[in-house]
Length: 195
Image (cartoon, rainbow, N blue to C red; front, side, top):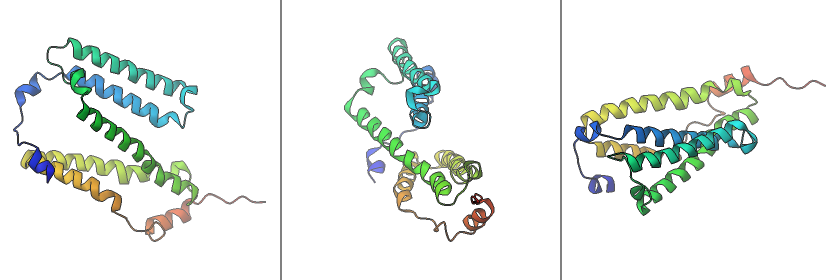
């Protein structure tokens, strides 16, 4: 409701899109991707003991510096440093970072459960995140693009935020009751050690 009432209805500004700072967006997006990958793989690869994690974090930090330099010299900056350092933007960024960090535990929950409890090897559970996470995300992106072309963007935003709010309370069928889990466990069970 707040999204509908608080967000003005605006048409697509194609003139602004034509003179957008694509270089700044690319630098900022790539820097966040590198930093996120470094933080995501840091625990697994022993943080700064790994050259990969060090390179990811250093590369991300270097691209952040390049982004701020780009925004200072470009004619029409995508996001000026004064806007990025404002209180509201910092609150949104802190919320997004907190959400990303807390969601990492959810992404590791299913693989850890299937490895520790069901006794599956990591290569046997690789298709599960692909089928139940990656493919639905691709479908949802296409549906969102289709909806944005036909209805008000505020309603699409409300639908997305409502989905985020409902998702933590949604509970699928118990793993022990599903046909896939039972048959997979019996087929892929790790062989027991023989004495």
